[in-house]
Every structure is written in structure tokens, then in C-alpha cells.
Length: 306
View (cartoon, rainbow, N blue to C red):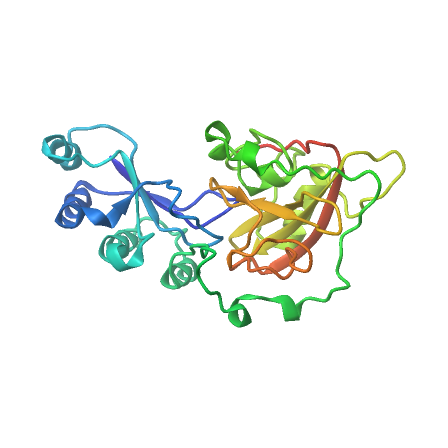
């Protein structure tokens, strides 16, 4: 039995659906005609940004269907999980066909998400590639007066490498990373730990969830210590994403983690989020709505996952 996952969100669970046996047969024909259409689910060669990252196909149950029967006799059997669509030039056929199979099965694949897919896979440029910052940066739209509070008691802890260890990377999403809660969960959700989980993906609901989890809108108060500073953004109606401040001024380095991907210090343009580049004016893709900076006097702000 094969499951397809549209890899597109950072905080929330991605849309998923099951292929029928007839669809498994057609997928086999598409892939075996050109095996270069598939790539590993995770590979160092592909560094994804916030947004569409292709589709993941995985075997969730071993059965005697057409997929397993055929795969057993292939000279080079297909892996139990693989990605398609991350190299659009080679993988357009399989990716486009798989997306079509969701139309009657997965209402979570909305028209807006299909528009995001149509924009293409978000790959972070290498240092050798040229980025047109006039079209990707929001720097001119953000007031420089919008700043975060800092006090003597802030905790600046750059530990992306810890979250990127093999045993941790798939077990923490953007909220778990921002909260510095290793093992917080792939689906750590604002408000779930505090008993008031955000139900809608707008600033009001997510802010309420953050307050329930112990976050505040002010970072300086008596007896505060090891105060974490995070920034919250919303992909309206769909998802949330967080950044954590990991170094003091004058550098002001930020880090974030996209879903089960790598924690990093760069935006979708490959620029380090530091100095004048902040979460407010970096390239965040569809995460357009800024909900504020939040603070918690705790080296680990405990979160809970679905």
C-alpha cells in the first residue's frame, strides 16, 4: 500500500492520500520508464526552503498488490520511500500525475496549495547562484522600528547542529526548534501543551495558543532568566512558522527549522538572517503574516505534539 505526501508545510502535517492498486500500476510504469524521476527523501544535495518540496511516496503496508509483486522482480528494486518533483526538469511527469491523484481523495490539497505547487520547488540557492533580491526580498516593506526586546537575561543558544543530528531531525518541527525543546515532536503545536491549541491559522488563534504555552509579548521583567526570543509567522489559513534569536547583538543571528528538514540560519534566498536581514524582511515564501515577537523565561519552553 502506497501513501503520497505533498511536502509543503513547516509546522502542520502535510496532506496525504492513498493510491489505489490501479494507480500503483500506473506509477510503476511512469517510474520504471525513467528511474531518474525519483530521488532520496533526504539528500545533502537538495536544500529546501519554505514552501513546496516535491511529493514523497512511501510504502506504509506490505501487501501482495501490483507494486510489491512487480518490485520484487525488478533488477533494481525501488526504495520503500522516495521523493519526486524536486528536480522539475526530470520529474515533472511523475509529480504532475501524482498531484492529480489527490483531486478526489484529499480535500486538504486546496486550490491555493496547487498554486504554490505550480510555482515550483523551493530550493535554496548555492553560494555560486545569483539571486534577484529585488523580487524576493521584503526589506523595503518593513519598518526598521519593529524590533524585539532584549535584556540582560536573554538566552542566545545556537544549537542547530544538535537538532540536525540523525536521531533528532525528523522528530522536531519549527515550533519545537524555536522552543528549544529537543524531542518536542514533528507536529508540535502552539497551545497544545497549555491546553488551548490553535484551531485556525491566523494570528489571533496562534497567539492564544502561544500564551497558553507560557509565551508573553514582553521580554523584560524582574527575576527573568534565560529568556528565549522567537518570531511567529503565518501562511494564512494553512500553517505556521517560527524563528529563534540565537546570538546577541551586534550580529543578531536567527535560526529556524522547516518541518522535518535541517535547522539553518538562512532564508529562501540563501542569505544569512543576521544584522539588517531579520525574520521580518527575509524571504519566507508564503508565510506572510507577522504575529509578533514572543518571550519565555525558560531555556526550554516545553511544547506538545499531535
